[in-house]
Image 1 (cartoon, rainbow, N blue to C red):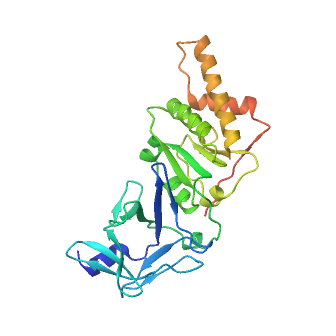
Image 2: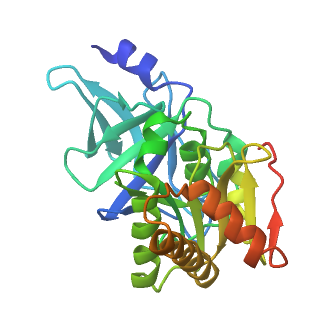
Length: 274
C-alpha cells in the first residue's frame, strides 16, 4: 500500500480517538470541555477536525510510511506524534486504527456516522452511563445498537454468557458491584435504538420493544434495574422451586414481572431516527 491507497482507505470518514481505561470500558478525549477529539484525513496530507473542540490537538498532518505500512500523525513542527496500524474492520462494520506507540489508544469510526452527532458539547462520562449487553446479541445482531451507543458516547459492557439466564444473573451481580453507575441499559434483544434516545436520561424505567411481544432494551437508573432484575430472578427461582421440570423462558418471565409488578412505574419508549 502507498500514500494514495492509504488515503482511499481513510478518506470520507470521521475517526474518533478512544483510550482504554479498563478491560470493560474505554473513553473518548474531550478537548477543552467541549467536543471530543476527532480527525479526518485530507488528500494533501493535512488533518482536519470535524468536531467543535475547545482547543486543537498538537497533530496537524499525516503521511503513510510505505516501508512499515503505518499511518503517521505528525505534530505542527513535522515530528511524528502517533504511529497507527492500518485500519481493520470488525463484524459490525467498525474500523479500528490501533496506535502502535500507545497500546491503550486507537482511532475508530463507522462508515455512515453522522457528523452532526459530533457537534454536541455534552459528553457523558463512561463510568456513569453504560449499556450492558449479552455477547451473543453483538455477534448475531445488525451492529446498529453498537454504532448508536458509540455515537451517544455510552460505553458498552459485553457479558459473555452461555444463555440469557446466565446473562441476567451476571448483569445483576455487575450492577450490585458497580456503585458508580447512574444510568444503565439492559439489552436482551438486538434492537435499533437511536443515539438520541441513548443520550436521554429517562425519569422512569423505559422499555423499548422490537415488536409488540419482544422486549429489546430496558433503560433506567442503576437502583431501578437492580430492583427489576432481582424480581425477575426471584420469579424464576420460585417457578423452579415448585416446578423443577418446567422450562422457564427468561423473556416470558421478564414480560410477566414488568406487567405484574412494574406496570405503573414503567413507560414504553418510542424509537426515533437520528
